Image 1 (cartoon, helix red, strand yellow):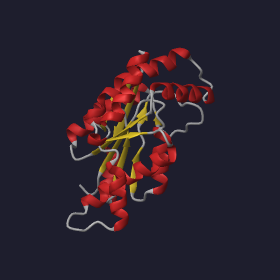
Image 2 (cartoon, one colour):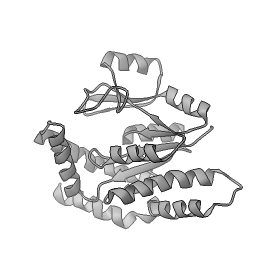
Image 3 (spheres, helix red, strand yellow):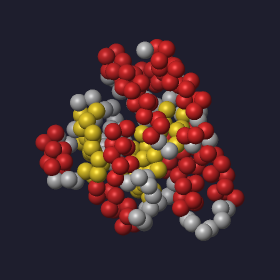
Length: 231
């Protein structure tokens, strides 16, 4: 394996897309896997930028041909990561970034246990609801049914947090961007075995340690409680 695989998952509305976009902009040699989906584009989304939008028939054809590294069905729509992205990243010696849901993340970790998994969470259920409502308004798709469905799904998805290596609570955007970047750069530094960490690398690792699963249990309890109290 030439590089590392980074898995990023999050409930809808947690701010994952913003964090991922900033990570891609600021960290070099990081190949991004654009997922295939059968859902329709939303807002200003473009084919080949956020997703590859394909028909259900085409998705089923790719699935039958074993072209997906992982696939899942969410809200009645199918999503999948093409194997070719992993091959291309390996050829170039780049790390591969996967933006996938908890189902896909579980599949990847089973096949590639060395992958580094990161789960992004909102600070509370109330904050997640505010973000979902703002996004729905901006997309011109205000639907109470959709919002409540996503909140319910989020309450189920966050139960998967123990399966991830890092937990990043996105409560302060700029700080969260720094944390996500630090995780990637620290993991790269640790992979360079036999070399002492430079001062900047040590700083990245110190910041990333705040997101280690073992160090965020109390914060997670508070977030979980906010979902339970409103359920």
